[in-house]
Length: 211
Figure (spheres, helix red, strand yellow):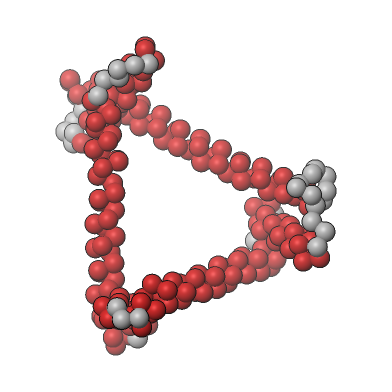
């Protein structure tokens, strides 16, 4: 992509570059006024976009259908208004009902979406022997099966891990340590990927590399 030539595109590019430097001034130096300015501006813009988006969603999903004859849409509108009662100390208890409904619905939908892929599918894939793939597929199958069983034994068996339980629970602990290490390594790589992207943007704005 060619370097932008329109005035506002160039202004936006350099504004993003300057704001990036002010944000990175915190980890590279210390907290300072320019970092706080950029942080507060980011939060303000984020909140403003969310407010506008949510208002549009309420108008599109609830208000417009209600005005077109779907009277039942008044129920979520009333529930949403009740949440704002938490701003009034005397009527804060009113907000507990819609919040409880939201938490309950979210918990129910979360369980529904978790049991299938995270429990049922995991159990099925663990106990189903591979039908193709050769030795590597069997190695992966045994590795996952042993790791799952031993890790569950380490977590679920609350008695002292001695005797026959000593070896499998120690193996489970090793599997857990390997899993946490891989998770931490993935997090570090993700941070470096973000840093690489910002470095690329830095060089592009200065025209040191093509966009």
